[in-house]
Each structure stands twice: as C-alpha cells, then as structure tokens.
Image (cartoon, rainbow, N blue to C red; front, top):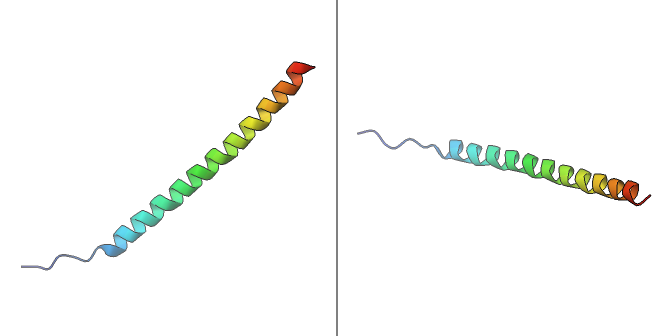
Length: 49
C-alpha cells in the first residue's frame, strides 16, 4: 500500500495564484471605479454649463 502523496506545495501554489488573480481583479475594479467617477463629474460639469 502506497502512502498518500504530499501535495501541500501544489495547494499553496494554487492559493497563491488565486490571491494574485483576485488582487489584480480588485485593482482593476478600483481603477475603473475611479475613472467612472471622474467621467461622471466631467459630464455633470458639461451638463450644468
């Protein structure tokens, strides 16, 4: 009977990749949200003129 293989390194690598992808996604959302707020204020400025 073979012992259970040690795959902890793969689990850590998977969680690391997931964390990096999520950080990039959240940074992308933050940049898009900031750009949206800037565009909305620009449109409000144009509308009031």
